[in-house]
Image (cartoon, rainbow, N blue to C red):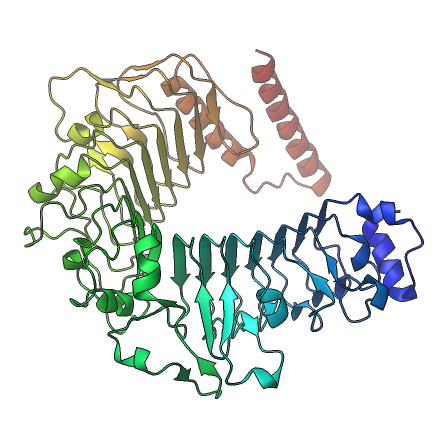
Length: 556
């Protein structure tokens, strides 16, 4: 008898378990998926026997409405402290409660360290108040895509109205909240949120949630904000108290304006290493980044610019009147979902110190960007390059820039419908070879117009290149016009689970795959030979020949 069947039977019987305590006591990890067709995942008569459970993962079920039913726990089992450390709830469209009833003095989940909730669109609140006041070991709280969630901690007793509730999370280091349009507060009443170890705070697409308050902000003089629901609301944190400890942070335009107040300490964000700029208001587009704010971030290494409406260029052509140390330590640049971005601006002379330090560059859904740079640029420290869903991009860069990628390790290009080649042969010099001494992995996916990687004649040396994936690049006829030298190459995959293919050299392998693709397309064309039986026999014969050919290659 499997556990899911057993719990289903017990839900009907509503009796004590018919197996020993040891049966459930041995479980440390439980996972329920789409096959879970019960409204209660853990019934009240089973819950007391799961004291040793460390991880619970429930996902992909439209039937689940409650995770823990504490409604009918027997008196003698009350006060149990559960060992649960990790709770993962994903894609549960009808989930209404994680804990069914007021659990104060019934059970304790004080050992929780990680809570991850994603895609629970019917969930209004996550924690009961009594449980939230006893989460001293919680380290990570990640809540995403819960469209109906109004508050994270729900009110339990009307007597609490007017009281200031203390929430202490001495171990919480990461708080991530995303895409919750109705979320307006942590708790719907006067409260104090204490997170002394918080160093990563990411809040995106939660337009009703106030992130910071300042002692200089007029709104902070009002202890709480009165919402349309007549519930007391207040910002999550005091900006002066939490900011100096932060290493990772998401900021919108409102928060940047608040943090730019000259009355605040200049070293307010001195430890910040990871910044996400996320301007949610598409009616208030920004045509440039807040470079005057970046001087407050002397240790910034990782910058993400996402959904900043109106932004057409990251680095303007004219040098800004900013301190030379602004963005001096930047190593990773992510440009995500910038629908109006036309140019990155990495080729401008004043930006060169930044490009030479970059180790990672990622472009995702930047439909108007035509190339990464418009002239020769040195990326001597770039290790990872990702370009996805950039429909207008015809090529990434030219020969001179390609030659500078001496430390490149990973190159992933996908879903760029206009790309014909990765590097264009426009400025090839007398150099007869390009050495990619660290390149290990190339992935080219859904590039329907791609013809080749590089059209020049220079020899490409890739001593560490181990594998390559080429998927849905139907017009790719060769890799390069010149010689390619490989030392550790295993072959080319055409999908995640396909075998490696290699014939003589890389160019020959690409050409072979291209011809196979052409032949497969011809074989799969609509055919009819007089009657249905003859047509089926011909198709079967073609498929058998194809299978024999593939088998011969594997054996050879």
